[in-house]
Amino acid sequence: MRDESKSFFLDLLAAAGPSGDERGPARVWRGYTSGFAEVTTDALGSSTASAGEGPPHLMVMGHIDEIGLVVTHVDDDGFAWFGPVGGWDPEVLVGQRVRVLAKDGPVAGVVGKKSRHLQEGDERTTQTKIDQMWIDIGAASGEEARKVVRTGDLAVLEQPALPLQGARMSSRAVDNRAGAWVAAEAVRLYAEQPGGCRLTAVASVSEETSFAGAHTTSFALAPDAAIAVDVTNATDYPSVSKQKYGHVQIGKGPGLSRGAAIHPVMFEMLIESAEAAGIEYQVEPADGHTWTDADAIFLSRAGVPSIVVSIPLRYMHSPNELLDLDDLQACAELVATFARRFDGLPPTE
Image 1 (tube, rainbow, N blue to C red):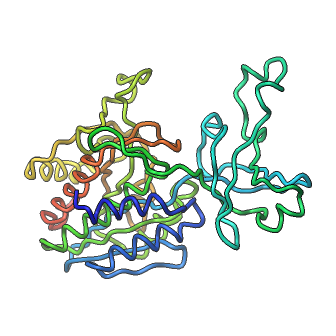
Image 2: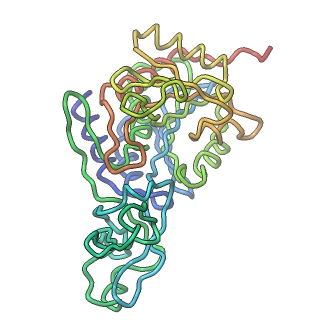
Image 3: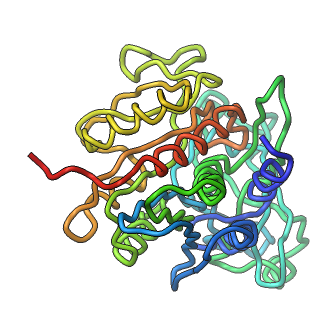
């Protein structure tokens, strides 16, 4: 991976962008892609970057939002109570540091709960619920806290990127800054060596809560076909059933979804592209849903043939999501290769 490309990924991870307020990472994404593509943004905050000439028009989408928290109440003692934005395992939140996206700038805080020393009965063995935790910003009173934090403020966990062994690293927000990175990087690679289609990357908003960006941007762009890029659960660590979820490993290349939710002709074209470029890949099952932006894209207008390319990820929806950067790079190269070979889809038989 180029140094510039890696720095771009780290900048995306550093920016806070929970569903509903993705402005920070979206600015990073547009700043990077403006160097090689035509860049736009829309009313909801989704961003696009296009290169090449068509028809046909191929769209590659990676959502740029992350799961987060929302302040529901600031009490008279200065504690900020919160609810989830997206799907959290409450156990993950205990003891975490947070960054509240307040009106006048980020506010630091920590997630608090009753100390183990003060717990009674089954409190020590029962999983803590979200409504039993709060954000402590260190305020001495409700009046002091309300000067800086308001009901409705969004927040993210404060966990910086951590280099691990080899090409592996962990961070919060890999889901799905990784997919947004792949979409942007694929257009950069395609712009250097274009094919016969127009390729548009999209950094969509609000996938974790509503698929809003996928719905609206797909309708606006009206592509002939689309690739959704997201993370997928690796099943290469203890306690996960490969029989139930398939066998997906980090460091073994992109995960390619196949099944009832995937366009069969496009899938075969994707496999052919991977093999032509010598890119290692893994096939994972998809039933009636992919649980990615593809589920919204597929139903846009009169229907958009869609496939999913995924970055294998351990510990999804945690502040320590773990990936292999070689998989990330391979995903971008695969999408660019597919775009260079894409000349439209044959008529449906």
